[in-house]
Amino acid sequence: MARSALEEMSATGAFERTASTFRNIISRDPNSRFPAESGRYHLYISYACPWASRCLAYLNIKGLDQAISFTSVKPKWERTKDSDEHMGWVFASSSTELDQDSGADPDPLNGAKSIRELYELASTNYSGKYTVPVLWDKKLKTIVNNESAEIIRMLNSEFNDIAGNAALDLYPPHLQS
View (cartoon, rainbow, N blue to C red):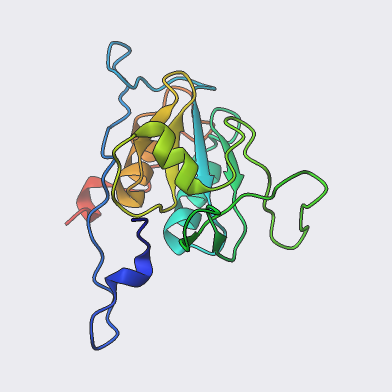
């Protein structure tokens, strides 16, 4: 059964967020499973999601927009499959459908119709939510990470060898506590 963030509302209306599932880390170490390489990663976002939008902000502020590509889904949820009623993030279906106000595009890498399809590509037995942001590895064709706090930390430090603004530290040690 497909899940969404709507299932994380308490009886009082509070948002009770469950932990993200894909928690791999990109590293400066060239021998790591996910090394920081220019052109290898893609960020999937929605401009309507503040957590995903902050990842895009980091990408641009750190000067990584030439090293890491990105695609935005539509800002309004739609059905993700004809076989069930799940509503979630979907891509524009073609370049002719592009809504200039939303910034949504078709998925350029996998031809996915929804973020849900990316999760299903990455894990055949995934049972969590289909959220953005998604940091995708083009080489291994999988999700690296879907936790915005971890993604921004990686963008802040692990890509400094290829960042246009490498000296800019948006997470300085003296403010981390």
